[in-house]
Length: 272
Length: 293
Image (cartoon, rainbow over all chains, first blue to last red; front, top):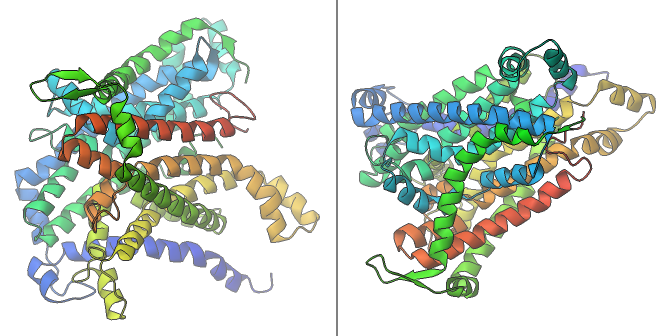
């Protein structure tokens, strides 16, 4: 305790080192996105000699690039809304009631979070082709509910169980009907839980590629799949590829900033 | 928490059940259907019973992919869990630095998985990547497209980079939930740092640690996109994990029967292991909610 300054520095050593380890590859991607392809291939340098935004301009002016971002945003938003809306009443039921087969249903729902996407890729393709939804945003949004609804239920149920039962009972005595109680009283109480659940649905739908790529060809192609095409087709334009990568990191960074106060509890699925 | 028996609550679960049934049960039945039939094209199918299962379970290719998968999952768990725990223990507990730490650490978790692959593919390249270039400059023979050891090391470091933060965030959530009273009591007793960790922090974090192990096991066992982008399963088949192998079989070679049988076996393994974790996790307070409060 006699040298607090030194102790403080020693204490933050590990997190600082870890953050440097996390940021280095991202920094490398950022510098590459600011270089021309010629500079990348000709000389090795730790920072761009002549920083240029040319790679970003390519992305923002080429519809096959920027439509990928729009497509991803559309199906991710649809999926988040569907998953949270379906999970809310279900989570309430698991949190408040016992009913026929509740534990089995809960575990069965969770098993879908554990299902390897590779198992589902081909059957999804056949299912959504046969009902005429192939290459639509709603197909990807529905397919992603496979792992997002179970996750949302799990998170929301954790947050809901933290709300005392007495609140429900008091509301019913006061003459609230269930829907009115749920919307007016209960939902505001678990607002942070809903935010965290929405964040996780956003996150897992945003980062998933295998299913999203299998279910789309042109009209709903996600940005992640546009990037793989560029790798295989040219394999050369590293600058544009790096710029596209940086642009896929931004939405995540923005969303994290909004939920930063709840993120730790959210990652523990509301059960701390 | 006291729960009431109310079978009408099933109606509240119905929308979620229907949606998940549509997205999970129908495709899963398709897979099971393929796994017991053979086809000679023309959409004609023949019942073959358990033949594909026998073939897969006896094939060297499955054994090799399975062993690689186990080795990969075990390695990343053995690194990420202790590392994540150690970083969570050394994180600041309050102030603006907490938000900064959490946001920066969570960043890799929100990068699309193939972009994670792309980042590492670029970063580890020997010609234009910082890591590959530096290592070769230092005289280390490193090339992840040719060298098996380098390919494995790249994938493991990439996974540590990608997912250790999840363990950190989980452990951190567990740590900040410990009431200060416990630490005060420990100080009065003159407990050492190790004793505080061993008898206060570790037991209080056991639950989040289990969640961390469960999530990391599931996700590392299903890994597909990142190795596919970085190594494509190579060099040779050195990094062909189960999912990579499955996609090769189903979409590359279009061997529907064996691929479907492999899918079912794969899914069963994941469920079995996850069920074991889940049972341990909820043993003390078996409620879907659980929750130590």
